[in-house]
Image (tube, rainbow, N blue to C red; front, side):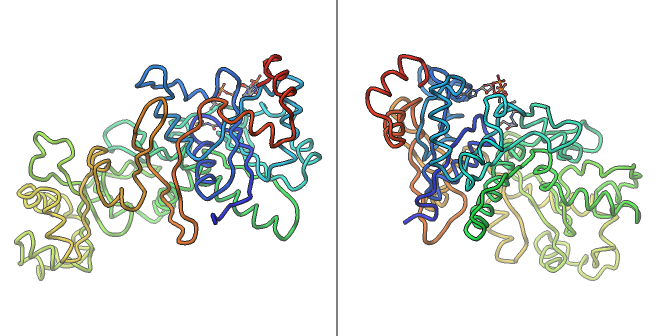
Length: 414
Ligand code: COA
């Protein structure tokens, strides 16, 4: 048995944010019916194609454990099928541009008429307000949600991060909202609308930066490197380079081989509780008692000197040796792992976080499996569907016969 056995998802999502959410629902056991435009499908099927003729990795890696139904919801036949789907399903998930569903004729009021238990979950770029009608992609959300202004180095431009916090991050938020609405429906018997705006989701992930914005009123942010460098703070939370976001100063430091390997680095945290161990490791035992270094406060104005000294040590070791030496001493460090290293990491394969999947068009490829582990609901990652692969079986489930399906095909509705 899977956690969401029996729950049917009308998956009207495309690109990345919505599909991340419905993929999770599929992994938790829901029946996810992905509705796609006939002949076209989700735009990502044919984006960043590495193997001509086959669905892209962009699509396959975001659409596991789903069934595909092609449906032109702008035709009369298509609208009728969609109505049946709405009556049949528990949750409808969509991330169209604002207003697209209304233009299709499926307002929230209409959906409730068809199925009062329906949970309608949407990703939009922005919530209600001046930008609510805007289309939004990942990096726009990172910029509008506060991530870009606080990422990068102080003397450089704002930076976006490789972690897809706007798309996949919002998909996670939406998934949480759906689960909560399903739980409430158990008691209320009613569905509801769930909205996860990308700007809000990114801001939620940048919570500590809004914390720092308010702390600025009380003076400089002492754990930021620029404090130790004597550089004044401006009106807004600045970019902090690789400074740690918490109260324990940390940096990315070079390791052996950094001259030729772009990932020969480690993150090193000078956690106060293990300061004495750090002093021993870097051969600075005198810093244990020296009042200029012995306390976290004293160290704040000397972080550059301290991290330069630690780096002189880390540069003599490779990033894994740093970990092997520091971990037994409780010093928190972490190697900078490349995608290549992660793809080859046996422990991630063992836990199902990196999974090899076989696909009829492209053969074997790697994907990131379900990152959340439920002890009583195991995840089997199954390949993404081909466009319209399950149209006939889904239409049959909705009560259509062979001849109906044939005439829909001829009318271009599926
Ligand atoms: N049958 C018929 N028409 C369909 C259809 C189907 N099965 N599926 C989609 N369409 C139509 C829509 O109704 C819409 O038509 P309309 O503009 O006439 O109303 C049209 O296809 C395009 O949809 P849209 O969502 O506007 O796609 P887009 O490619 O122009 O924009 C985004 C893409 C991502 C920018 C936009 O969808 C968006 O801003 N989404 C919300 C935020 C979001 O999720 N962004 C992150 C994506 S990873």
